Length: 201
Length: 201
Length: 201
Image (cartoon, rainbow over all chains, first blue to last red):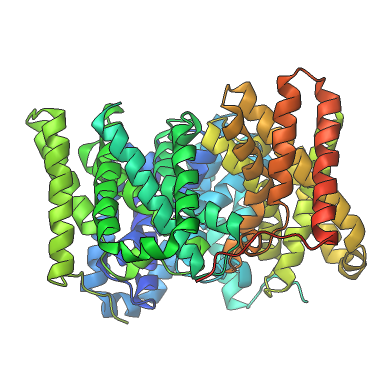
């Protein structure tokens, strides 16, 4: 098992927890909560694979994802208050997950000879679309459209990854640097309350 | 024409009617009502085929579906009050449709060598995602996320189908038993008001 | 560069502007506005390609689309009041875009031997689904479901295109006639306030 695959499953777990937690504000039942956690975890990768045509999509070909998602839903149901108290730790794992999803999206696209610029967009899709679908199903305007959460970090991380890949840096080091870059940008954005301008009426 | 194909078209008709009826609460025009009925009928199967990569998706390759959907919209427009009075009959056909869609989703997945556990999820997707997309477009939180309607029945039916398929039972008998199981579970859930726990805030 | 390809890029630009403008009513930030413009422009074609299985979808294989979309978002940010004053000109370009997207969807479907009736539906999808996804993400019931905007014009244009194609008219003349037909129907509908009946409760 590669480190990236392990981090991918970790990201899937954290995304599931964040999706299932979102369901608690909406009075969803167990099925709704499971489904919301599930779609948050696999939505981005599913959309990426469907757009690229690499089907059956990832989670349909590997049962590990559904086991990790089920684990995430059960953990959230059993230890909800505990998890709510671990928000800072969750935030770190969540950002790692975002970085990993971005990298996987870019790597997959580049291997299909997609233009690097569009590969970055596919990396962004992998990272953010699960949350967008979650918010849309829960009848909210996607949080990421109103308040900078991690899109900018993904884009800068993506540009770094594509550039370092272009100059031939070894993949493992590139992955490490890109994820570090995404974590640092995201922490800086939150620490210094950096956000994008709003398009006013 | 096989029995399953006939039941598939029947399910498509009933799903169209339920989708078109949903439009009456939202003051949609004829196009919006048609589209809502259409998406309710084909949404689940479309998502399943797109995720599995079996494209062009089913309804694009067989004009019978669009004729049945058009018939469903016309019937709803002409005989709305009559249909509203037939809710019990509709409920039975609706449950048959759910069972058929579940089975078709599972069979298609198994034929692509998808793991049985994930095949059950694809069966569930086939049955419920049309309604999820309908509710999302109509700006509601999907009904099935808040109140147990038929997800549990699909899952139990799916487990039965996969198990009986595994021990080599003939397909026709398996299909009959699975649909019967789904109908019985659903009726029991409604009769005895059995529902899943809600994830509280 | 063919005329249809040029008009396709023009339609993409106008759809981006309409999507980005929609974001101003929702207090979205720059990322949200960009994403909304992007999805309005490519949503219909993406859904069409995914349903037909012609993947990677169009905009992933041709960087011109992302450049035109970026241009559209920048223009909207810089010249918002000017653009708001040009609504009549925009309306014409918007209708041209709708006609072009309809034709591209039909042509692509026919080339895959899809039945003409379903090809017209795929043409309609190409033209309207970007707006449907935009409205759903912005938490509105799709405008096109409540008030006839251009679905009828697309359908009549589509029927004309398929018929003229069937009798062997040259493609360029057929494209010109179809787009003209769609523009005329849409202007007549607005001028004479022609709309579809609403399905009442």
